[in-house]
Length: 154
Image 1 (cartoon, rainbow, N blue to C red):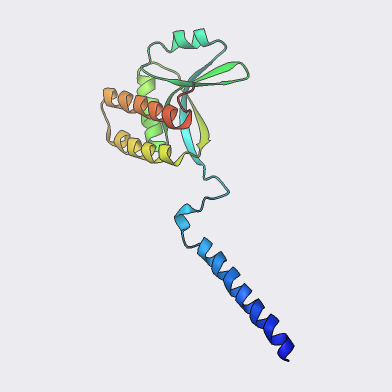
Image 2: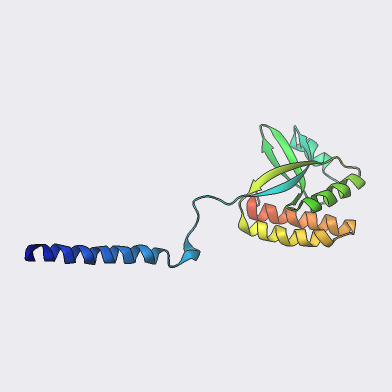
């Protein structure tokens, strides 16, 4: 019986220390990052698709600010982003009143900082009625998206 007492006490001590170490890992929840990315679906307002960058720049010269992406030698030009479907209808109406054809594309974004800022701009846009304010909000959203999600690269 005495020969088993040492290994039993030793295994209890090792088990206690191992469990203490494991529980301490969860003590600071803020430092734990998720393996899965939480992506949020956003409405990207696309003005058009162009085959050359020169054609895109020429057609978008009237816009104060825009962003674009390239896929398979095509240039996709975006003139607005929102998360709110009510604001989407407001933006559609704004651009339609100016005579532009726009297309809505749903894309997922996982940048939490941008989503927080977009929520604030969506709140502003929700109460905006003046076309100049709507245009300024759209421009600022695109600037923030470019700065936070595209790292200034277009």
